[in-house]
Structures are given as structure tokens and as C-alpha cells.
Length: 203
Image (tube, rainbow, N blue to C red; front, side, top):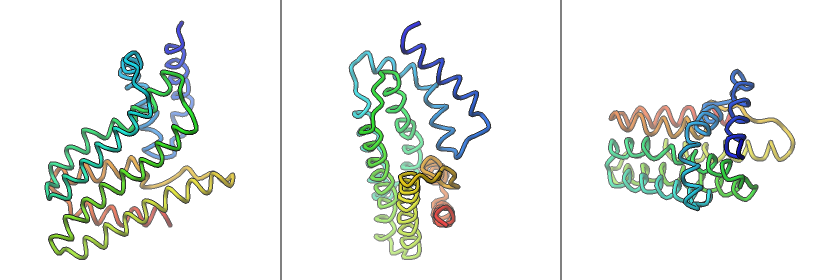
């Protein structure tokens, strides 16, 4: 049994042990994606692609979606976001397949996730500023601050040794919410739900 097969077997075993212990959709989705994306990760590993390159690619793709939002193509941006979002889980799968998990990779992933969040929300904000929708702009800025606070609070708590895993609207939920409601033509509903749940998660 080679190292990749051992990693897959260990991950499946871990998945079974933790089936009823998910802290959030983000944790569940990352674990599921790690198994589903492993064949792709193996192929990328054979091509010599580094996990950090995928991390950067994921950020650039989501920043591109932010530009699409800023140009006013909200529905198109929503569909594009749903298409590119899985790339966010591919870097971790590739790192595990290659045995290249590292603290720097984790730090880079977390940092670029924040930039991706900012690009998406600021893209929407730019569109609504141009349209004079001041209430939507305010709600989006509240959502952005809350999103940054959720990440900071979790990181700070864990650094101090306190468990801080549970969250109503973590990153995966936020991406799914923005993508799905934008794609079906409900941006106003998306903005209100995003703001309310983001603030509730912080509190």
C-alpha cells in the first residue's frame, strides 16, 4: 500500500469517527472534499503542482468573481462563484496527497481566504455604491467587518487555548449563501441574510 492509499484510508476512517461531530458546514465540507478531490489532487501532484499555487489560484478566481460583481453582473457572478468555490478545498487535498501539509501553507490559506472574502463583498459594495443603494452598501460593509471578526475571534481564541469551532456562518456557508442567492436573482435577500447571520455569528 503506497503513501497516497494510506492517506485516503486514514481520512475515511477519520471521517467515520467524526460523522456526528461536525462543528460547521465548513468543517464537514472540507472533510468530504478531501476524499472526493483526492483523485484530482493525485493527478496534480504527478504534474508537480504545489499546494500553495492552488491556494493562490483560488484567491485569484474569487477575486475575479468580485470584479464581475463590481461590473453589475450579479447573477453571472453567483454562478461563477459556485463553480470556482471547490478550488478552495483542493489545496488541502493536494497537500495531504503530497505529504506537504505545513504551518506556512495553513497561514497562507487563511490569509488568502480573508482576501477572497474581501474581494467578493467589496465587489458587491462597489456595484451598489455606483447605483446609490446606500442601505445595501451599509449592510455589505457590516457583513465584511463581521466576517473579519469571526476569523479573528476564532484564531485568537485558539491561540489562547480556548476551543472555538462552532459558528453559524463560517466561510463555506458565506460563500454558498452569496453564490446561491446571487445566482437565482435574489441579491437583496442575500445581502440582508448575510448581514444578519454574520453579526449573529460574531455575537
